[in-house]
Length: 342
Image (cartoon, rainbow, N blue to C red; front, side, top):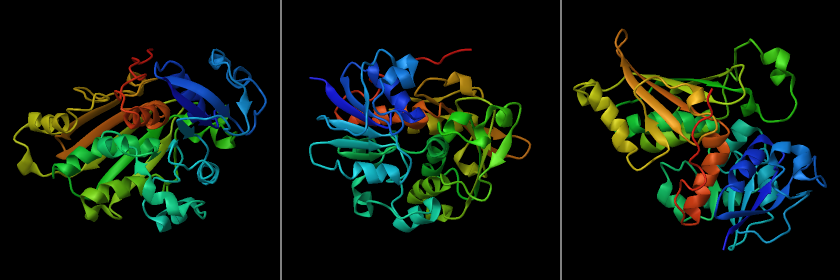
C-alpha cells in the first residue's frame, strides 16, 4: 500500500520540487495537488517538466491522504492547514509557521499574528540529523528554513562538543530561487545578473531559528550570532561560512577537528565531511550537505564551510527525508540522486 500524498501550493518552487522528488518515490502516490493561481489547470501547464504527473491542480485538498505537505508562505500556510488537523493525517509544513517555539519571537520576526498558536507545541522541528527520533514519533513536522539548515548542520557539532562558544559570525550566500517564485524587482534578471548584494542586513528572519537551536545547547548564544545573507547570480544553492574562536584544548591536531564532525554525523548519510572546500554545484539537485571545517592558520580561527541545494536539502528534500522517518521508511528513500554537473 502506497502512502497517499497531497501537496498544497504545488505551483511554488518548494511545491514543484516536492512533486518532482515524490513522483519517483517507490512508496508514494501523489493523489492531489493545489495551487492558488493555477487551479483548474493540468500540472503540466504550470510545469511542463512535471507532465508525467497526471493531475489537475485543485483549489483545496479534498481526497483522503495519509500525509499533506504545505508549500504556502508563512501565515497563509498555518491558516490553510489548520483545517486538516486530525489524528489520521500527518502534516509537514515548509513555511516558518511552526518552526519557532516562542510565539513572541514569531510575531516579532514575521510581523503577523499566528493563525494557530495552540498548535506550536505539537510540531517537531524537522532538522532530521538532530531530531531523528522525535520526527519518527510525530504527526506534525515544521521543515527548517534553508539558511538554518545549512548553518546549523555546520555549527551544531562544534557547539555540542564544546569546541565553540559565542560569539560566532555566519556569512551565507544564496541563489535566487530562495526568494520564491513570486515576481519581484529584486529578483529580476537584469537586477541579479552579474551582481552580488547583501540583503536583510538589519536582521534576517532565519536568524530566529538559528538562535533558537543554538540556545538549546548553550543559552549564551542569545544575541551572540552575527548573520548576514547575500544574493548571488545563480538559481540554486547556499554556501555558508561560519567564523568562530575555538577551544584549543580539545584539538591536538586537525585530525581531531575532523573526527568531532565525523563522529557527530556517523549515522547521517546526507551530511558529508569533506576534505576540500565544497562548491554549490557539488550539491545541485541533491539532498546532501557538505561540511568542511578547518583552522585558519593566520588568525587561528575555526572556519566551517557548509553547502546545500536550498530547494532540496534546504526545503523539499529534507521534507521527504522527514516523511520517510514518520512512516518508518529508510530516510534516504527517493533521495539518493547524485549532483548535476556541470
